[in-house]
Length: 292
Length: 346
View 1 (cartoon, chains in turn green, red):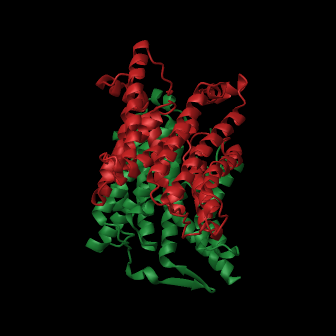
View 2 (cartoon, each protein chain N blue to C red):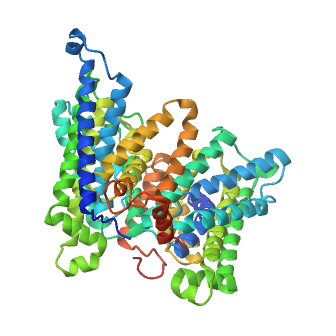
View 3 (cartoon, chains in turn brown, cyan):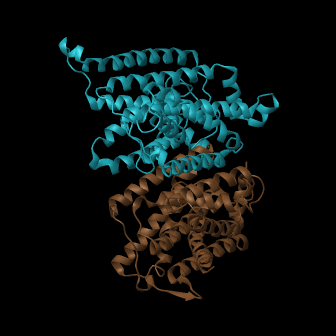
């Protein structure tokens, strides 16, 4: 019983990271209709930035979060404004190819800058945690979960309670109508992508505190973001949160509780779920309407 | 924006000329490796092609198959598959298991013959549910399928597990594999041509342009899509089977390589998606480029960066592919490049 409880807690904590990984991805996909294949690379960029600040200036990873977010925000804004905006009306496939190209460039620039050694951010408190009735809760993962949920809430508030958010949602709903009422499409697109990038940066910062990073480690995160968004459903921040936590739970429980399956099956499980959800319920568990 | 290309009379002449030049070049390139045989050696002919170049030629032929196969689904039918490498991998594994001395231990020809069958059957099986999805959802579902199949294969001991499989090494068979792969490439091009000129092919194009309308005028969209998917799978599987024997080693990262996956797509789009020779041209150009850039391992990182930039440039400036400039409807000019930017941007 304690083992099951421990696994559930661990699953939820792992899920917290997935929420952070998927929030920005979901926003960009939902509003801009872009599946950003460079999302994982942007996450790793955030992770390296955190590591660099930690290694050179001994800056605590949670204190450097705003810096990482701002840098990635600026990068995302420029990328969308200069590059992605130019193919936004092309067939879906072209944005996939373009962002894949960006992914290649980013990953290899990171390889040039940081080499392929494993790095990790290890503040003094990284090993400690609290035990509640035999269930261990590591502080860092708990903090990561809290930050992830905070980011999700912030994005939701931004989208639903501010003028900028209204503009973003309007653009997502109908590009031409949004332009008619005087919304600057290029700016709003860039802004949306920038917010997505900032979220990716924060996710990267969280990841750097819980596992070792290397420039090529980003790809799985792009794929996991897919799974989470598809699982929860596109178009609502709440759906992404549910999808992320659920995915963390399924993955953790699947590896440890199902006999015959081990850590080697993690990806197989994830993608089996992905394909299954897509086929059975393409709009996700709590998504809005049927996707086209 | 559609991919259709309607050449003018002048364009058609130019295209015929280019095709002729291409064919002559092809014949020369295919005959040159014969100078490396023993017979040519005893006749005192100079050796025109070394082993490394043979390898490059075979790789190009392999990507002609993969890009052409992808083109049937991604270019013609408009279903941007991101998981065709699953078929390549399944074909490679089928062949490897069939010929492996510790497994089925059947003749090599049997391995190559069965390599297209298993992926095609798999394509029908997963195509029925997957091809109901559209756009990004289809792309992701196919990518997910490819990764999942690779991961499952890696976890099955009979299929070599994480170690992989080792088909018997054939000595001095470089030429054999080159011509096998070229034959597969020829089959892929001929199949594409047959499809393009058939009622079936027009059905696929109708689906790409407007699936609902296609259905209304009586195209059995499900059957069309699944058959196209299965043909693409069979071709990719054939290439995979030959690759497994040629390489005499296959594992998950090789058989289900996401690099191959993206390269075949890039080649088809770079050359011209939806056209007959676009994927061929794309495969030749891009593979040569990759080989030139990646020839030295110390510049591999820069090669990858170059590849990424090339992707961006292709997507931004030549969305219809290189073929479009060779007697197609477009002329290579600044005005055209600017126009294609304006067409797709905000």
